[in-house]
Image (cartoon, rainbow, N blue to C red):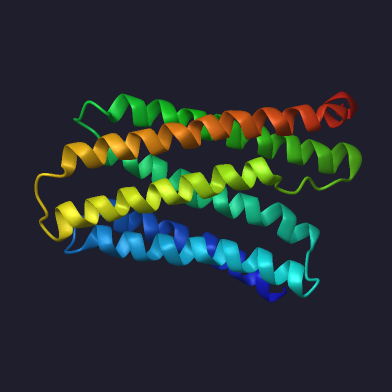
Length: 195
């Protein structure tokens, strides 16, 4: 296994630790979750650049890298449902999480059909990458806000932070829909070939 693929596997391994830090109450747990998420997100940037620069792109990496992203970001959105429970924003986070999961299952299924029916691995496109970046930025800002509020006791910013977080999450949900539609249009040939 080459180094970019090891970084991708590392991101997958980090995901349950990130989610535990997000949800289990201990001192500075949001800060720990934030650091873990940033570190895992950086591996996403590094593994792709390294694979392209040193000609280490593999079908395994093309398939596993977006899957690792999905695991990390959906873990965060599921955690935010718990974090926003009891607030007026909980239903919105739940709907956004549904949109994210629906899109991810659809695109993953399309990728499996493409490999099975046509022997082709569908790599992430620009819209998919924009979707992932928007999710990661929104999640980092949300975790940073919660670290400020809960870990460091900054007061008076919770309502503004929640509104900003929800706006960023809706933006990433819109990019989920757009990128999912583009993947679906691009994969029509494989859907027709599936038996």
